[in-house]
Image (cartoon, rainbow, N blue to C red; front, side):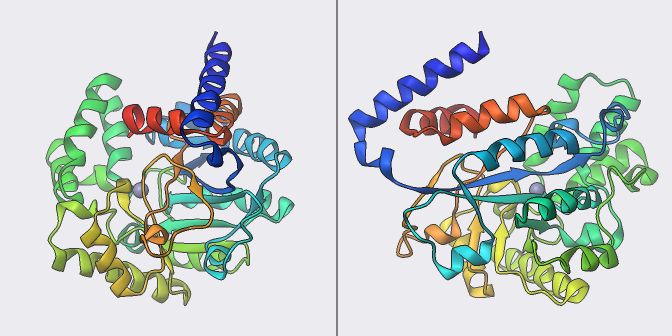
Length: 327
Ligand SMILES: [Zn+2]
């Protein structure tokens, strides 16, 4: 049933696109795919240490990647975009947000297929070994017998606050100890682990602010220091100065783009579900607002592959559906 529905959406989308803008069918694009945490196995999911919607098992990630490799895509790094791309090919950029230690499990797969990936790091988490507030909410919520519905509602309400306020709120609710990681599943990289990880030539690091700060919740002056602080931290940890930023929660504005550019960042990644058609328009600040497809909630390889098939089909209608219902 689901498969049939997907097929109908794809066919309708193709017809729709042919009528509205037939050139799009032939335009090549960059697909930026976003992941967060990696489970080593399904048992790790059942421990309820993290919000499982943000996680995929290593086995399912690997199966999905193998499927996408078979399609005619070239896998690129952020630096390849900056060097300039041949407009006659389709590309994929793999990205991972936040800085989970468990991301290191993908390295052997990336090496096997010689595929680069960019990891966007929230640096105070790395520096102070802090878990992410949404995982703490999930873990403690489950422990305290809250329903998933209640946890999701609380998460939505907290999202509009600053990260600092979210953490204070969780301390009030669950105590100081709740803000400590409980395992390798929920913890971030340590500075030395991040350095070692980043030494592989397939690994690229990006800015994700210093405390996973949703930038629209802060003043211009605060935003500047949150981004700059992260740039300096990543340099201190690894000797790398990032050229790319992923705006936490995908939130950006014209002002945020200008401020980010002034700090020296050359590429920005948003939370908009959209393909990035080639050539990328340099006049329109397109380099600072790449769309991304977030694999949020896609827990198995079959779901990921179905989602992938929808996003690779040409899509004015699909883009509209994503914008309307998923963002
Ligand atoms: Zn994030």
